[in-house]
Length: 225
Image (tube, rainbow, N blue to C red; front, side, top):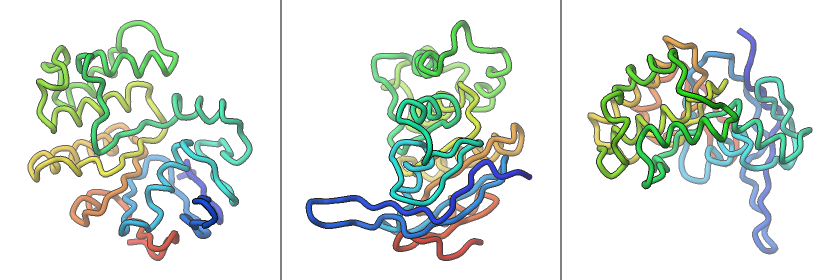
């Protein structure tokens, strides 16, 4: 299977006052299209920085990052924004739903910013059903449980059919039952639709839902399992 993500000797340095913080120290990895990968490591290991680089949220200091055929070191900020909207979906720990919009409104506004118009495509309704939120679409976030909010966030991330889904601690605010439900849904999305998923987590049990686990420490990939 061809790699959808290629990372070669990636380095990222943040300048904090007069101090250089080396967040990534020569990371190299490949992710085949359609794989479900967990990235684990302690705080400060570089996993969140890697997440932001792969999503086009931050620039790199040196090295090469290719996401679905685009070399992120060679594109402009405008092109990086376009990549985020077209090719990458984000699921965050805190859901980040707009409180004044319904669940459907949160999904539709993401579709609008992705350049799509008109009603939701019929084939996307299958994902809505898989997520179990078809009867909650007209409720605002405050009327939804944490698990339901996270499922809406997943639907929002998938509505533009991104090549890659990046999930940052997607079960961090959920109880055990809802955590397992969300992780099972991610695995189903991967298996049934071939969705490429990279998930950051500190939880070994959550990481085990993936096909492969990449372990990071001190800005480096130390092993895979």
